[in-house]
Image: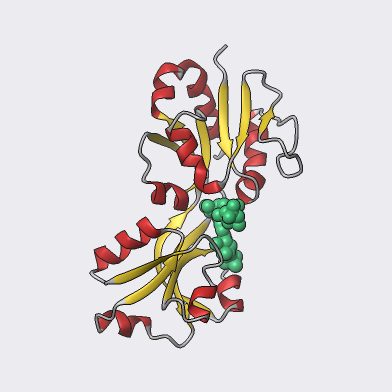
Amino acid sequence: MASISIALSKGRIFDETAPLLARVGIRPRSNPETSRKLVIATNRRDLRLIVVRPTDTPTYVQHGGADLGIAGGDVLVEHGGEGLYQPVDLGIARCRMMVAVRKGFNYANAVAQGARLRVATKYVNTTRQHFAAKGVHVDLIHLYGSMELAPLTGLADAIVDLVATGRTLRDNGLVAVEEILPVSARLIVNQAALKTKRAALQPLIDAFAKATQ
Ligand code: PRT
Ligand code: MG
């Protein structure tokens, strides 16, 4: 029996994946949210969960540290998707990647004037591509979190971050001015594993596809 591993992160991704796992017939032996274990056995002897940081999920699956993974579209576009199949959009953990600025900052005007923008984000590749495609010059500032602080402290003119309800922006006096991409979580698969372990992996991929319908 081929052994299968699925990489996923705690927090939002696990919360929203848990019902899908149940529908697919996978029951974790311990709760990733409360356990310190990073490798979690399941009711299926051939299948275990690997608990990783959200941004590390594509890297684990790309390099074969896990056969399958569940990762946000934001993380996947930033990673680039090399070595990965993305067969199922799970439709969970939905949000939008947006450009946001301080209320009162005239973004459209700054862009029209050809101003050089300082943009803070953890999505540096995606942000670079987005502004290059618009022909806007940007100085990127790479942050690892709490991007909302950057425009408030004068560190940046704009941020690129995820927006769900819009509450975080509102509470910090920021407004979204442009959508970069709609985000939801996807099932990802190591391309080599799909060839060598297809008999084990394909039914699972099909089950996830069915569970999202
Ligand atoms: O916490 P850690 O540093 O490990 O990483 P993380 O914050 O990226 O992890 P987590 O678990 O919060 O998010 C994992 C994935 O969930 C992301 O990669 C997205 O694909 C997805 N997701 C969906 C979101 C959101 N919605 C979301 N709203 N991830 C983050 N947010 C944050 C956003 O960054 C902002 O700070 O929530 C805030 C905005 O929410 P609203 O509702 O106030 O607009
Ligand atoms: Mg977080």
